[in-house]
Length: 322
Image (cartoon, rainbow, N blue to C red; front, side, top):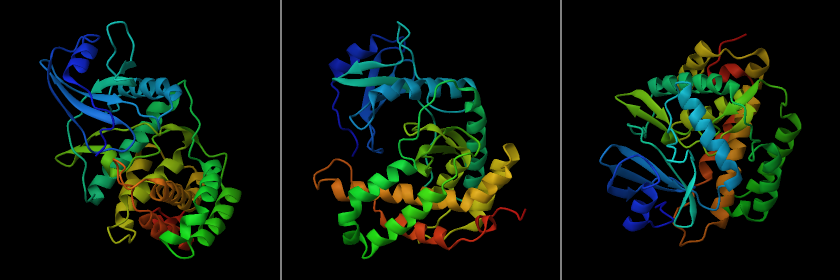
């Protein structure tokens, strides 16, 4: 469950008077998700998504996220589009929380991605990177390598309770990753969290991208590596090179990788696995038993981390020899 803030009929009807989107017919909470409270809202005109931003989202970042969505939608990226109020504002307040209304996207996410789905995602990611190239606002990656060292310290005393020897394993990898991390790769707006549950499909055709609340300015190839981790491993955590090849080729058909990006893919993929291992490990350790959202098991990313550590060439991800 991820409805942290209950909203009454009366409160929502009052909130909607600030918008020209019709009269409320019904609404219900969306239980999928982690960071914020979301409701599907039906009016006599259309359906919309109402989001209430909880304390894990910095209110100062909200103008960046909302204006980015507006910018991407204007550049033909299918994503939730903020609905402006009658006085032209994209952000309001409801039940004591910052709140916004965005357009509703048709489709659903796939539980078992196929190579075709991976191809669709690779193309969409490249289009996203190009569409964001002239976005004027910027936001640093709050979960980049600098944060991993801190997360490593915060989880060190409990890491071995998850997997024996994990504390030492993380510490060794962290040292190598932070020292070798590239700082001069082509960069711009990245999604930074493009997991399957953030991509909608209709009849196997990609219909939209959602959940841009980790979006930031960082290396494009790092975003690709996040997708390789999220889309190209099987349930038993075996790497599927066919899926990876489809994702990468579709991406490069639209935005070819530079030589430096090509060479960096193994390191970036290793780092992306470390990022999600550490954040999952932190939540696993610090989430109370009665929490509304069950934390994701970090063990999945321990196995992925070990795979990336064994890689010796970008070709092992499905890239052609250069």
